Length: 281
Image 1 (tube, one colour):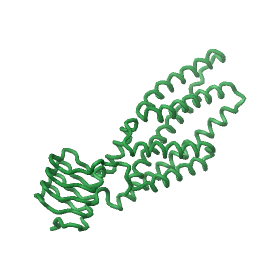
Image 2: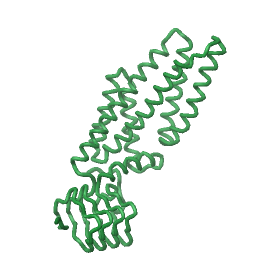
Image 3: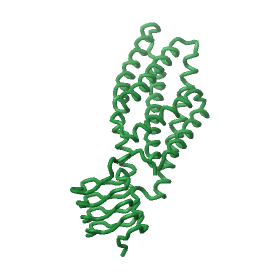
Image 4: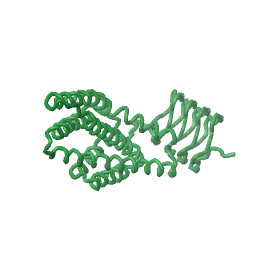
C-alpha cells in the first residue's frame, strides 16, 4: 500500500477516493498520479512535480513530430502544386492557382490576427465562394464545368490547412515539455516541407507555426481553443485531481497547468501565482 511521503517517487500511483487529509507530498514526484475523488484537505504539495510521466511525454512528443512531418510534407506538396499550376499555359489553371493562393494568404492572415477558430470559419466560407467563382468563370468563357480539377485543388488546400492546425497543436503539446521541444518539432516540420519541394514554404511554415505555438502556450485569447485542446491532451495523462477536495491545500511551486482539476474543490487552497502555462519543465 503506497502512501504519501515528502520527496517520494509516486509517478503513476493511484490515490483515487482515499482520505489523505493533511498528507505531505512536498517535493514528491506525482507525475501521472491519480488523486481523483481523494480527500486532500490541508494537504501539502509544495514544489511537487505535476504533469505527465516521462514515458507518456515521449509518446506525446513523438506524436507531435509525426504530425509536424505530415503537415510539412503536405504543405510542401501543396506549394509545389500551386507553383506548377500557376505557371501553366492554361488560363484556367492559372485562375485556380491564384485564387487558392489568395485563400491561403487570407487564412494565414486571419490565423495570425484572429486565431484558428475565426481563420477556419471565414476561410471555409471564402473557399466555397472561390470555388463558385472559378467554376462560373470557366463555364462562362469555355462553356464547360471543370469542377473536378477545382475540387482536387480545394480538397488539397483543406487538407493542408488542417495539417497546419494539427502541426500547431503538435507544437503546443510538444512545447509543454520545454522550449527545446518546440524548436525540435518546428525544425522537423520545416525540413519535411523543404524535402517535399516546398522551398520558401519550409521557412514560412516553421516560423509561423513556432510563433503561433508559443503564443498559444501563453494562453493568448486568439488561440484559446488550440490551447484548451492541447491542455486536455496533456492533463488527461498527467496528474489528476478530478473531483478531489483540495480545500486549504498548498500547491505553491507547482506547475498547476499540467494537472487536471476538473470538478475539484480548491476553496482556500494556495495555488501558484501567477500560473504560467508557457513555463518549461
